[in-house]
Image (tube, rainbow over all chains, first blue to last red; front, side, top):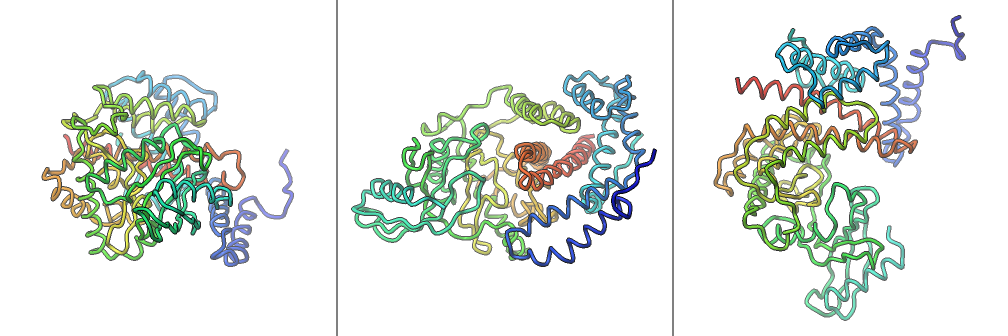
Amino acid sequence: MARSPLLPGSPEELLQRAIETLRARVLSHTADTPDHDAALAALRALAIAQAELASDPAIAGRELAEIEGLLGRTFDGDALSARRALAAAIRARSLPDDGPTQVRLRDHLLKATANRLRLTNPKYMTRRKRRAESSY
Amino acid sequence: MLPRESVKALSGFVRAAAQADRADIAVERALPGDTGRAHYLIAADIVGGPMAGRRSLVVRGQSDDRETTLASAEEFAIRQVAFGAGLTTPEPLWLEPNGDVLGRPFMILRYAGGTSDAAVLQEELSVEEGDRLAYRLGQELARLHAIRVEQAPSGIAFLPRPGADWMQQRAATWRAALDGILAPQPCFEWAINWIADHAPKIERFALCHRDLRLGNFAAEGEQLTGIFDLELAGWSDPMEDLGWLTARGARRGLPDREAGGIGSREALYDGYREIAGDEVDDRRVRFWEIAAAVRQGIASLQRAASTAGDAELGLAATLDGLQSLEAEYDLLLEIEQFTAEAA
């Protein structure tokens, strides 16, 4: 059963209104005060939450599938366990040392990092004038 | 600020250390630095003895972070050696190694002046001025690197000498740091393996600063007034210091000023070459830029983890921790470029 929202508007709309209110009514009053950095941090956190809500939900599934493909096992939708297993396999150097596997691994890492960076600092990749392109 | 009884104790310490008849201390302001570290600019009115007069001094307490940074006594010894070798760094005057005066060890340095504010320096320096400051930083690093491991002064004999497995030890330290972070970090694990596999053969180890970047030096305009924070110093490949300064994460908002967000890479290299006489090994510098991205990324994650329970500090540090993604992205692209250049 779908939950009815506590406040009018979608979570995305509420976040947008909160960001606009903070920018228009709070930020200007904190300039040159010790609270300014805290206000900016709060705004940035809201912007990241907003980007996360708006992001393609299929990305997490694709990332999980890539890890499952690399490790040759399934994780029943548990993306955190999959990343943990991938990190352990890399440290143990237990992934095949052949060229194709290493290219797939490197591509996966680049895409996974780029997907997160798009949410937290979308300008960063633009500034580097590079895109996370697959090489396979 | 220091409580009144600490100021009184400090006055007594300065009087004795300066062989003075009397010393009156006033704390002028807190200086930037790690949270939890005593770091103050003080005015000392010294009567009698060789230091008589009004002196601007810096009180620098020992860091809380005793896992990765040197003790005050060790940093003081390194500062003495570096100052003696001609490094532009505040003269180290006195050491209190026991914590008897302020409750923790500290040192007193001569105040260097200038500003270490990264935003101010980046905003105020023109391209040409930035290049001249970068040139000077190159010269300074070359002076420090003239202190070689094989001729190590006895005062810094405590610094561990690098063995054949020194890069494997670095990798082990980074992996141990990752073990202390809750979220898995496959990208850093991959990069650490790459670094361990591609470590350059080092012909000579030198005393390296290992943290020279914006914030850890002061200048008045383009004139360098002092290099600070030698608490991470140790024996390493001299190119590590250059790579740490040219790493993308050290450039703040000015990525095109490749030497620490200050000036050009060429100016930095030229200054280094002028004093060292050696060619700068650009490829090795690039290797160390990759290692710098790993160090910076892990440090961001550690700062975020260490303040996770603090609602306000935790939010800022969590956001700071997200900079690790920028470090990940940098090192993935830079390893690709490094490998392509070798082919």
